[in-house]
Structure formats: structure tokens, C-alpha cells
Length: 269
Length: 368
Image (cartoon, rainbow over all chains, first blue to last red; front, side):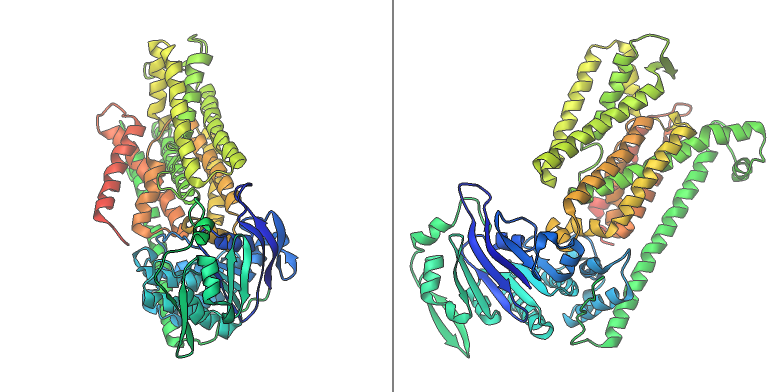
């Protein structure tokens, strides 16, 4: 299991981004990381994948400090879908095959090729297998990125704003695919999301980060109008439609609480 | 290796996945076929190149000479004059193209090459120091090249290599010390280019006309300067670098997509970038030190192949190497045949050959 314990991190000494954040990614669960732009959600993911080292606290992978885990072993246990990825001129098949890199000795094995072919079939991308990824639509490309993370066969999957710049149908498709992977493979997933409705629809655990601390964490019951007002500074109603909660923004300006949380450095959230 | 957990649930239609894999194997075979064709083309051009010159040689004469059965005159032309030059063109083309590939992937910048990173300019500065400062203008340690006097070629090569290595070390040192982004490293290279060019200009300003001419002549590039011993050094450095690059072909694919992806796949991005730059710079510096400045090959050969074959470094690396060798061989032939009996500067011809091909592909928008 991947977990962060009392992690603190700041890019500038005078402006702590994460002050004391603990989170555990549990098997069979899909966690939504929520909070305003710049609150440190993406930074937390980077700490969890050992891309950056927290200045206090620790990140443990199966009980071992992640910095001490062999990088190949780490890659076989934790997969990450980064926010920005350049679509280079690889075929869809080869781009997904990259996800098998942690298992390759030299070149891909038959097992690697089978894994990619199965995954492309599962995501309905057989006919795109030999297309170059740089000619795909945004939604198709994001499915390739997701397929690559899936074939990594990691026990934990982290996603940084996986539905950015996608139309509503593709957003649903991407989130549904992750949910299915969680349910069928029993992996742990954690995603930085801005759309609370998407989170409510597909995630089962929620964590709000504000002022460098965990403001609230738990199941869907923590997603309340009061919590959203406290974190985002906006008034909402939460209704239930066919058993699914939905957040409806109300008229009104964001309060100064949220404005204060949004730093001048842009989105590090 | 740890027991992996394959995702095998919801297996799609077995026939469909087998068809997909069959199509993928066909795609791989197509790429390999392109490699074979490129190799044949390069070898054909090389053979043609050996036959061209003031003394024309037939393919039979060339083969006879290579087998040691030819008369002394033919053997001398092949073994002492043409073969070292042709082999130099092949090795230098491979080295510069591979270096360009490695720079472009690890710095994620299509403009990265030995020229844009200041390595060529560092070498030119080193050569200027050798020719103008170290030769002292004295006749004892100078050598005449077609009427232009320059310093001892070994000293020039060593100083040029030193300049290129200095440029590389500054880039690697600062990027390591300041943990620079790939974009900043390229900008640092541009600044270093300007610095070394300024240094060369200042050194030239205090030199006499013949020394300035010698420096300019050196920067023209010349494949016929290289002897077998130097060729062996170039080939060794290039071979070692090539092994390193090819061993990291999958890692380059990940690096070019994003450093986040590379990290997530267990690839040490910073270390790979530093080592790649080191091997690329060693290969490029060795070539420039022995042959002088050769423009455009390192930049354009990977781009031409990228447009024709895609960005998969499994194929891009060997294809670019072959394209680099072919480009330099064709340029060398043109140097010798355009204005006979004059031999035109190779650095100008490589650009004249490469740029139109590149522009053509750019506008044609080749996708496969």
C-alpha cells in the first residue's frame, strides 16, 4: 500500500504548500483529491511517486520509505498518469507498450505484447493500434495514456487531472475505465480532480486539501455544501438524482477565503 | 523480477487481438525492411563515391583493390586516398546523427544539436587558439593545406576537442549544479555558442591574414584530413556511444513524451540526460576535432527520419545514423564533382543537400 504520513513540502520557504498531509491509497478504492488551484494536490502526487522529496514526513510503499525502493520495483507497484504528456510520433501500440518498460529486459516479451493487445481491445482501440498518437483526438490520446498506465499492472494508480480538456463524454469514459479497473483488479487509485460531480459519480473516497492541510476526508458524506464553501468559497446545493449526488453551484461570488488560497504561482494543485 | 499481475480480465475477442498483433508484427517487419534498404543505399553510395575522382575506378577495380589484388597505383588511390575519406564520412555522419538524436530526445527540443549547444563553436574556438596562439606564426610547427598555412593538425585537433569538451563540461556542470530544465540547457547552449563565437572573433582580430584564413579553412570541414589512426579513434568513440544510445532506446521514447512518464516507468531521467549528453558530446567533439565543423547533419538527419519513420527510437536511432552517413557521403561526392577540380567545403554542402530535403518533407507533411 502507498501512503503519505504527515508530509510537508514548500517550493518557497516563506510559503508552505503542504504542511501536514497524510493519505493512504487503499486497494479497491478510488480516492478523489480535491481543492482549489495551487493547494498542493499535484505536489502531493509528486511526493507519492518520489518525483520530489517531502521536507518533512514520509512516503511509504508497502511499509518501506519510497526513496529506498528500487526504481524498477517502484514502477511495477505505482503507475502515474501525469498532467502533461507530449504526444510523440509513436504508434498507439508502441505508446501503450511503453507501460511495460518496468518488466522489459531488452525488448518486449510475448507477454508484454499480449498485455497491450488485450488492453487496446478492452478499451475498444483495436482499429487505432497502428495509428500515430499525434494524430489522435484528445479523448483518444487520453485513453492511450490510461491504457499505458493500466498495462503497467501496478497495485496503485495515480492520476493528475486525467479529464482535463476533454468533452463530457470522454470525461465519463476515462473515469469509468478507471473505476472498472479498480473494481475488477482491486487496485488502489487516486486522482486529482476539479470536477466534484465526476468525483462523486466514480470515486468512493474524497479528500479536501486546504491551507496545506487535510480539511476533510472520508466517503461521500464529507462532500457537503459547507465543506465546499469552506474549501472553494462558493455556495452550492447538493441534490441526489437516481442515487447519485450532484453538486449544483448557486449564484454568487467566490468568497475571499478561496482567493487567499490561490497563490500567484499558478496551478500547482 | 517480481511476479507481475497481468490484467487479463474481460479479455476481448482472441482473434481480434491476434489480428492486431499480426498487424503489429507486419509493421515491425516494414521498419526493418526500411533499415535494410537504407543500409543498401548507403553502401551503394559509398561504393560510387570511391569510384569518383580524378582517376575513375570501376566497381571491379575497387573490389580488386580492396582484396589486395590491384596494381600499386589503384591500390594507393583506394587505400590511401578514398577509403579513409569515405569511411570518415560514414563514421562522422553516424556520430553526428546519433548525437543529434540523443540531444533532441533528452532535451525534448527539436533544435538541439552540437551546433546549437555550442559544442561546434567551442571546437572552433579551440582550433583558433591552436592555429593563431600556439603556432606563433612560426614555420616550424605549421603545415600547408592547399596554400593555406595552419598549425600542426594534431595540435589543432587536440585543441578543438578541448574546446568542445570545455563547452560540454560547462553545460553539464551548470545543469547539474543548478538542476536546470531541458529548455534552460538549450538556452545555455545558445549563450555558450555566442560566447565561443565572440572568443574566436577576438582571437582572429589579433591574428594576421594567413592565420585568419587558416581558421576559416579549418571551419570549412575536410573529410580527407583524417588518417586511419584518427578514424579508429572516431569509430571507437562512436561505437561506444551508439551502444549506450541503443541500450536506452525505450527510455528515449519515454523521455520524449515527458519526464513524469519516464520517472513513473522507473527511468532515472536526470541521470539519463547527463550521460546521453556526455556520450553525444564525446562523439560529436571527436568528429569535429578531426574533420572540422560539419553543419546540419546532426540536426537534419534525425528530423528527416522522424518524418519518414516516426519517433520510435528503436528505429529512429539506426535510421538517423544511416541517414547521417548517406547525407555526408552524398555531400562529399558533390564537393568533388560540382566544380572540378576544386573541392568545395563539406560544411557548406551538407547544408545545401540537407536543407532542401528537410524543407520538402516539412511542406509535404509526410506522416508515414
